[in-house]
Length: 111
Image 1: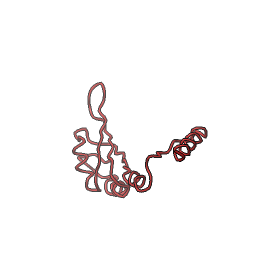
Image 2 (image 1 turned 90 degrees about the horizontal axis):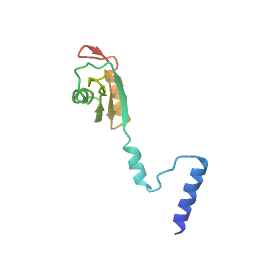
Image 3 (image 1 turned 60 degrees about the vertical axis):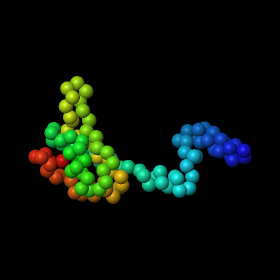
Image 4 (image 1 turned 90 degrees about the vertical axis):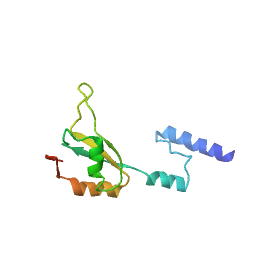
């Protein structure tokens, strides 16, 4: 009961200060696990028009574990844009991909 009141008081104080509310349900190792699972996205420009998200995943998986890839599609005509995003599981894999693929030529396009 006392812990509940203390938590409510802390939440009220943070709202009054205009700060973001911290997730009070996560404690100890759970908060550490949530932080450790953070994902990093890498922006890739000048992609070939024929490259889809599976091809992008195949190319960029050389740098590390790829969680997700995304290439936006135009609303009106349905064509793929010439840029995309590759989401990695770790910061190390994202930085390695920058070293490996920066200014690399893929299917005639320098990315």
